[in-house]
Length: 121
Image (cartoon, rainbow, N blue to C red; front, top):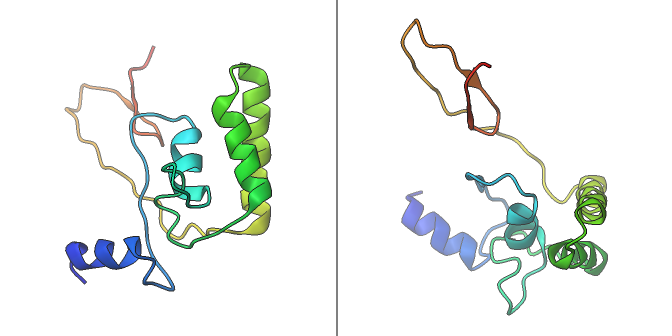
């Protein structure tokens, strides 16, 4: 199915099974929790929750973490949210995209899972 048709169907929740890739330069969990895992609402949360999962307890954890400025407490809330997501099996990861790198033989680089360049130190 061409991407133009696929995304049009999934954005309308016209699917029983879908594949969604999500990632980027930031590694903060909120950039996945809020748009992909939170229930859909009129505030922009859950825009990519194409399974239309609705879990008020899970949403409350995401909302609490989103507004928390206490770094330690925010991280604990994110861990609770991710554990809840895992325990409820809302998503089943089937594919992990690897971005291939190439370099000269005399260049050494660490290929991290988050695709950030880390020069050996």
